[in-house]
Image (cartoon, rainbow, N blue to C red):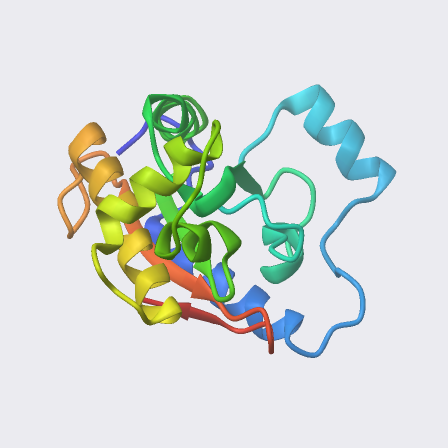
Length: 191
């Protein structure tokens, strides 16, 4: 267990995410605390996020809204296709080790442009490094939803191997799980 007194267990964090997503499903605004008081508090006392969320850069995927979270509650890492390399691993390690955040969620989504591009052909430029990583994860899969799930599983594997986190969690209390955000109706499916 980390030496962070306010650390939330992975199980407690998952329950908060699920509850927040339930709230989001019928919300027209984010009920998360974004008040001047919380801004001042997190400035003076630092951040204590209860979950790490690695997700796509897609503008339709906003973890703080999806999970009804406010300032300081989620440590969000966004990169097209929610792919993982050493930069993202370093960010995850920082939040887990230095901030005491135990739950790591790789959040893919439906209708992902990066996954779609990886399923297609002709990608060039810097984007190719993203689609090549996704292509290695999805192989010849032709169903976009299944491809998104395979891509999430690949990112989980990179995190688990890189940070030595077995499926049941590690001795520090860290646990990594996957989820898919359904952009059509807003629900999060935990895998």
